[in-house]
Image 1 (cartoon, chains in turn brown, orange):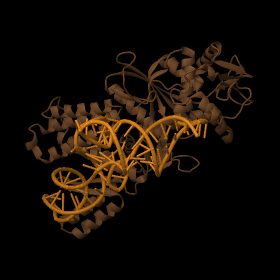
Image 2 (tube, protein in one colour):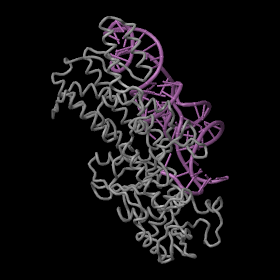
Image 3 (cartoon, protein in one colour):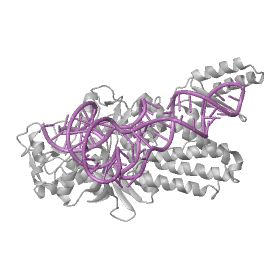
Image 4 (cartoon, rainbow, N blue to C red):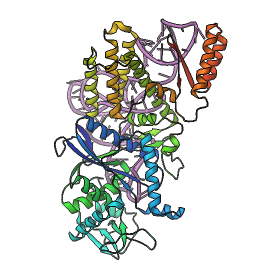
Length: 477
RNA sequence: GGCGCCAUCGCCAAGUGGUAAGGCAGAGGUCUGCAAAACCUCCAUCUCCGGUUCAAAUCCGGAUGGCGCCUCCA
């Protein structure tokens, strides 16, 4: 398997430290607000990587943390006059609501910073003992000059950083680049007892402490959004490697950004879109498909048009899956005349996903399957003597591949009829009644009336499909 | 100022040395009362300029145009 390693800026052959086992740590969210679609992309990307590694037979230990203590949480809780802990808990709950809608698998461990204060203190103390950290008035800073390979992940060097430093000057620090490992707490702020007095962890130290606890000094993959490369991941490396003297992670994976209408998503631009808002009129699986349709390292541009493209593609896939399921009619065979074909698709899927998780190419495999299946189904029973068995096997395969991307697990009819939003004007019963009326009109060859009803439904986002078996309907996504 | 990334059909998007996957949209056709879905056919020489090579979208150099990081950020 080839994986692009941010550490060396090239694709490299991936070999796990322990055969058959993989340890992966992905930086999670700071819980002070609802998640936005940038989080959604990162979450989906690592969910797909997790699913795919398991699909390939690895025993995967996937760790994703919650940052539940930090400046932003404290500020927000002060603004709202609520307890910081309660605020964090609230947004962890909200996080799970979004996560479940997006169909994300739960990681093996989801550690929280505040549950690992002892480990954090221990790590800071070790750094201090090694002379890689120093305490000043209850704060503890990392002594950057002592870590010679600083900047290896982000491609920066200490001198450049020093000359272009925009960091505020703090006389108590030996170097402006030194960063806080432990912060003395001000009155009224959450704090924990430590050898340096009452305080709380700095931003980066929790990940070093928790990854070490769950995955050891050196593990296989560390990931997160591109924006975390500097300074977060760089500092994690300094902390962990400074303490252990061993590499933190063999592979570093970073996903690209999400833009909105070709602009960087940011609060100041006012184009921030939360997952919650988006899901009001976008089916969660469409969002997922949108993410999976691009390579994880490319930037993606979020726009109504691009989401519509994703929706149309997903509909096509579900359309084929629906036809297969219908043809199979519940038949669950263990072999069929199409098995060789299925195996060749499977191999192609694995080939492209083994190449740096090329999910966009994997989607193309699904479209190939869809194309061939439709063609095959159109030719009728002449195509294969064991049509139901073969159809069932192909459907199974689509679900198998779909599952590793987190797609195609819904019943096709329910996906196609659900549409994009939750507040559809017409309920199922009303639609069925109108279809009944239209079919009565069609019986009388009253095409004008039949078309009037169809147009009316069309305006409400309902599309009709007449067939020998009756009239089917779908909602547009 | 420092570091780095990207530029493929109207839109989305693969392809990393051998002569351009796929989806959406569009055109024509089959099917249909008409549609929808599906199928068939058609629809790009890869921003530009040099270079390396028998051969380049793919490698090198340059230009232009986007973008990111260097401060909290997925």
